[in-house]
Image: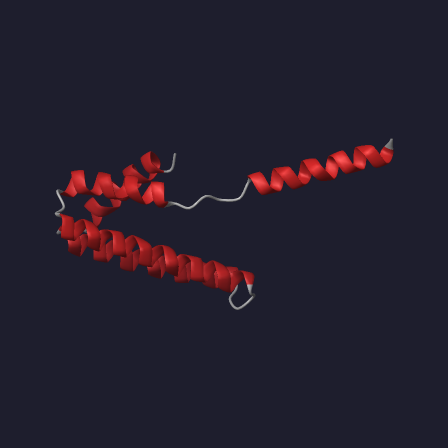
Length: 117
């Protein structure tokens, strides 16, 4: 009986872990791009530039996560590197849209809640 329960428990854990794998965030990016286009009245070229900014920032953040897993950097270093990536992204978004940092930050906070669903 204990063996059967152990096997069922192991199967349950395996299924639970495999079900929790993260999905790609393309839907979030699409939502973000749509909201940015509406809010800032972006042209198609500007929308493509924003998409490139999003992809680059995501890749840079993923590289940081890989570095942490590999033990190349500490968690304290992650904060600084992530902040640098975010600051660059926000500055680039401000240049692209012609808006101030404050307006960009308000937009990011509002859209972040909408698009994470």
